Length: 116
Image (tube, rainbow, N blue to C red; front, side, top):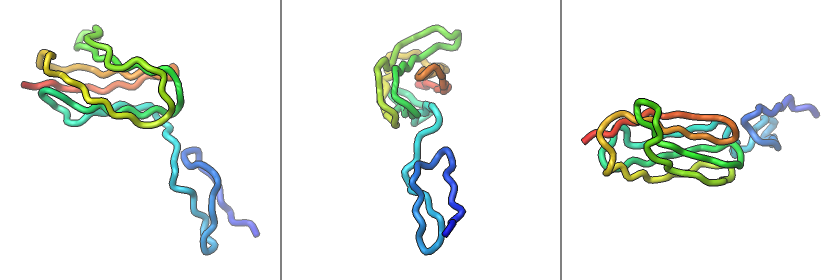
């Protein structure tokens, strides 16, 4: 009996059939390299969340508006997954900054705003 099930690139096989209906498993692979933060804007600290689709060397840098590195927030080899890191910004001058995430030859950026 052919079910007509297919696998998209964001869903891991195997598929299961329940009551004749094709249902993918709920576990999904991270497909995008992302960096977010909360809250934004922030005053003294913010939480950065990074998502890595694959294992490898990872670096997270804080850049000023001129693109100069202010601080390296993370430099490590990590497996695929999502990670949260608290960032203490109490010593930063108020203003706009860019968080640059580099992993697996790719980059993701996030603009953040420090206010007092």
